[in-house]
Image 1: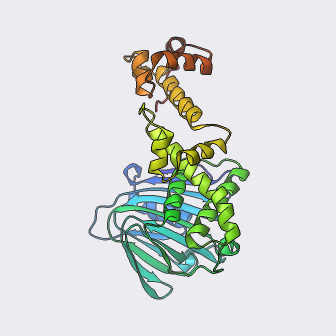
Image 2: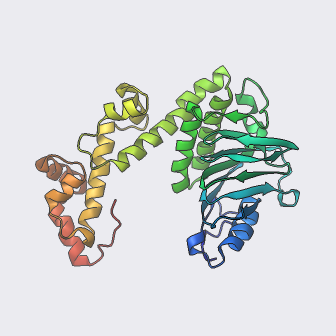
Image 3: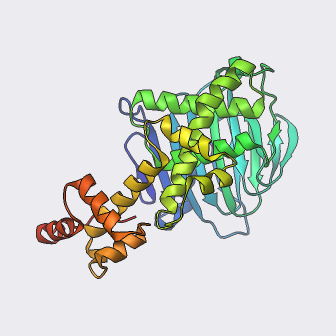
Amino acid sequence: MDGIADRREVAGTPAAGRPRVARFSSEQAARPVEQWREVFGEQMLRMDLEPLPGHDFHADWTARVLPGSRIAWARNSPIRVTLRQRLVVDPGDNISLQWATIPRVGKHMGREIAVEPNEAVFLSATDPGSLAFTAPGSLVCMTFPRNALGPLLREKDICLGSKLPAQSGALRLLLRYLEILRDENAATPELQHLTISHIYDLLALALGATRDAAETAKGRGVRAARLHAIKSEILENLQDEKLSAADLATRHQLTPRQVQLLFASEGTTFTDFLREQRLARAHRMLSSPRYDDKSISDIAFACGFGDLSYFNRSFRARYQATPSDVRNVAAQSGSNGQPDG
């Protein structure tokens, strides 16, 4: 299927223990609108997707199915998303959480609805309705069973049509966690269920969790989301020699001690994680012909090591080989096509 990455779990039952994943790019599709609507929309998301007239169509979508939940991430031109009764395959009482960087207008259960940019809204995932995304932008949509959150909430019901403001801290944490999940594969059933638990924790906090659920969420879902967000920022800034736990704490509205405790929950430290990731990047660069023109010191500095002697000692302790050894072995084997980064 041109333009759609199909892991063979997209249609039908997923392989045991593996989530279903599909990706679509209009730039790679032979028939972009038709494939987006028929294969990705109807078969994967069970929704009717259509471009709004008067705009050049483009779409880049990823969808993932986890136990009891379906999540989609997208960047696209103006579109309309419609839930039609003929596409509903699960008669259960499911909820859809939709967030987007762009305004949305439409009808939901017979009522007019308007949602501002960066707000999230809770909608029925089983009753017909539609939303128009009136400008190019990004969106996230996830569905889940209503009863999954009921025991976690002070108010036992989710009011359909209710919104989460853009400034909601729990919403921001949830979006960060989902963004990381888009590119990761929770391969085992245990990891899949743990991931869903983290998501429900964050949703409950955003909607108003019971005291017990809030305490559980702070020690589980919130911690996981914060740690994922901090790790992601570290990986994006490995070249910054001055990157510190204090800097990250300030950006994530935590204390340095809280950052250290997040890493301690996984049996490591901020310093060890940072060094390990820098060494791994240096190893990939030394193994790639793309960097043959770079000296070992250039690579060390590019990975955030300010002291060449410390880099060499750390590299040898980690890989039981010197940086020159790794570069020479890669050159001799001819298998030095590892991606860098």
